Each structure stands twice: as C-alpha cells, then as structure tokens.
Image (cartoon, rainbow, N blue to C red):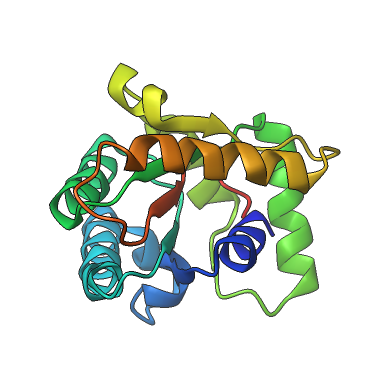
Length: 178
C-alpha cells in the first residue's frame, strides 16, 4: 500500500485509523462519534512520537475538515511540516478496491459498500490552505521513486518554515486506498 511505502521510505511510524478504532461490530464502528474519537486518539498517539523526532504517517481517509485541521494544528504545535497525500479515485474504482480487500481478507478495516457510500456523500473537499500542502497521490502505474522524491521535497520545503528539524506528518487524504 502507499501508506506502507511512505513508512518505509521515510522511516516513519504508521498510525492507522483502522487499527485504532474500537472493536465494535458492524456500522457502529464507523459512526461519526466513533470516527471523531479514533482521530483524536491517533493524534494523541502521534504527539509523543513527533516530540521524539520521528516522522509519523497518519493513515486514514481524513474526509472531514475538522480532523485535517487538528492534524495541521498538531504539526504546527510540534514544529514539524505536514504534507497531505491527496488520493483520488472514482466511486467505481473505490468499490472494486473495497471488494478486493474484503475478498483477500486479513485487513483490519471493516468498511463495506454502505460505509463507502456514506464517505463519498459526506466528504469535504480540501480547503485552499490544505491544497497548498497537498501532493496528488501517485497514479497506479507511476514509479514510486520520483513520487516519493517529490513528497520529500515538499516536506523539506515546508520544514524550512518549521521551528525544528523533528519529524514530519504525511497525511493520507480523501479516498485513500492506502
């Protein structure tokens, strides 16, 4: 997955929302209040990792503006750059990827077609400020090397305005298949 490639390339710690969600069954696992608590937990876990100088990959869809703003505030408070990996795919591609993941088994995500439909319906686009931090995700056929170099360059450029040389916070964003 892209998130795993980021973790390996950046020697980062991966915090994955699907691993942090409470062990609820069915649709309750993706209720807005549960999702909000999951993102809060992910950011709370990221804080000490960033303070130690490590890079953190926040592996989640970040479909709502509020959690993206909270991640930006964490990066700002920690004095580290934040990069948004903006992954886009049409609904049919997303449904196919979801089906493949379900058929393969072993993935901690319990999202199904109904969850995906709600996500598509409720997704909030990146704000202009978020777009300035965003790097479009790599095309399926794109060589990861040049794309990762662009991401590193983006993070380094934004770190010149940061207060420290501590880690960074790449964030997987709308419709992540990572």
